[in-house]
Image 1 (cartoon, helix red, strand yellow):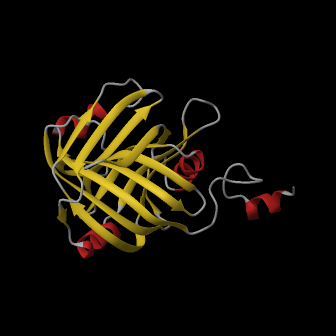
Image 2 (image 1 turned 120 degrees about the vertical axis):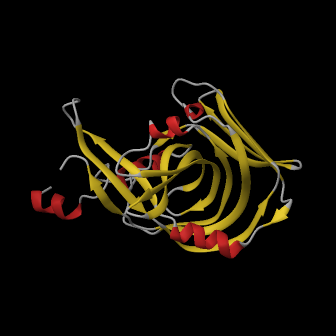
Length: 247
């Protein structure tokens, strides 16, 4: 391969068949189970990077099922998002994510900087209960539950929140010298082209369990604020770098 050919065509890893591709990352019938809870301000201050600002002590614990995702197939995901503000606009900071799909992990990290690790999340209906669980290897580290479809929520409001709320990530690519970061950026992206097929709420609970390599319990549950479950078609659209820590 010629140098100019590589410069023109290189996008993702590996070069010959990259996990991160120049496609529309459309997801059909994506299921969201989100539990909002209060945690400790000091715990949040320890993990939210400047120049983001904390606006509350609220964390969103998400369990998600993606049965039909362009480029990725079918996979499941769980993670924590923190309410923040950047340049006067409210958004969420993706603190930790756990996924059972290697293509989604590598593409998510390479393109946007989503903080993804391999694990075993699961979202399912367990008789009369919506149940979200997360195992790291064989050990359970999170469990959330909600009464199944007790109350109907406003789908238009769900759509508005999804499309208007920016998601911030700390994108880090290590240097080959093993001593420093080659890329360290605060990135931002949005979810677009949203169609909500239904949204519900119900009584909910959430538990975290200690684990050395999946420390969701570092943001402990102090008070459950509520939960929602909705199904939507979404498009993970391109983002931008809003702050570069190395320049």
